[in-house]
Image (cartoon, rainbow, N blue to C red; front, side, top):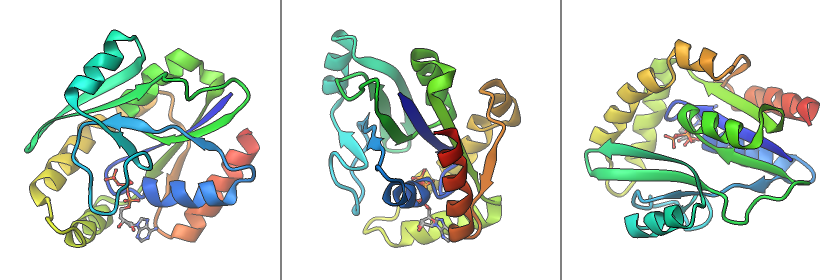
Length: 193
Ligand SMILES: Nc1ncnc2c1ncn2[C@@H]1O[C@H](COP(=O)(O)OP(=O)(O)OP(=O)(O)O)[C@@H](O)[C@H]1O
């Protein structure tokens, strides 16, 4: 089993590059769909970006010992839970792909083993990344600028150099030009597979 694990700060382009990589890889990797209690965004679909669930549904999966890792974010809209679950999604002979955080990468690597993991860490210069985050919020019916700012600040601590080093994230991909980034990410993944 291999798990291609996309990470990066908010608006670093994880979703964008992830979708393109999924399109280009043949056979296409299976997606690991995470669970979240955050409200669905306008362009999202339940079961595509995430399984959108309630707090009690997460609690039930915990009782059933299905949760591999779980994070709680204290947002301006309340607590949002994100979780990865061993819910029957995984089989030994498949290649999987998902978007996660550094905090989630570490327990997942511990659960499945380092040899299973193909980490893809994306980065964008902070000013450009903030511009992209604002532009993205503007396209939403209800722009959540406060939450966007909270995440921008939280990212600095969540993806600190110490944490990147501790998680053994050495390779990084700059997402300035989409096509260049995609090409580099694809050739790295193909090499690792
Ligand atoms: N190389 C690029 N050039 C220009 N715009 C980009 C590029 N990559 C991504 N974007 C745009 O930047 C915004 C953020 O990208 P995306 O939603 O993929 O980021 P993300 O890392 O998944 O964000 P989050 O973690 O906050 O959900 C989107 O509007 C996307 O279209």
